[in-house]
Length: 261
Image (tube, helix red, strand yellow):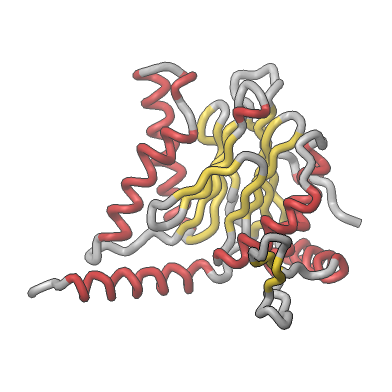
């Protein structure tokens, strides 16, 4: 059977639509720097969503649980092989995402005879100094972006833009982890709310003329978060820069997670 470039392009579009449909109900993930490291914040039902990858690396994602697990295992395997063959200092999120995961996801997505991965993942690395902290957003097609201060993984790009706009309004790199988590939970709620309609189709022009997402008011955000906390449970992972242990990862116990009043 002949497979033309047109067929390939159509296949790619169908796969994009398929992944987008499967991600639609996924619970967003928020990554934020704070004074002592990096936090990943989300809400989940039963399965864990935040995982340690290596001593200074962690990962969370939304999508198919089997695909999240496959990416997690691949990341851990690569990180430990790098640490053994080279040194622990050579294990970076850039190598894990850029060398191991991204090419594999690209091949899987472009192959019309394989099911694409249903995943959007957020990786975090804590450095020796705050300037070395990194957040990597990895998509189902292998494309990834790098962030310094905060990053959001959600079902759509529009949701991610709204969440990032909200997080950027209150982000404070000098805050403690509790404040970062509180902002992360409210940012999560922004991602669960529908786009705010306006005369400019949901966007307002900034000083430079660039489109700025219109955000819901705080009352709607509070309500959306309260509804989410009734059905889901918060999950928070921290990479603590000054932790005395070799592994900087800590999964915060549920009773220690700050709950908005």
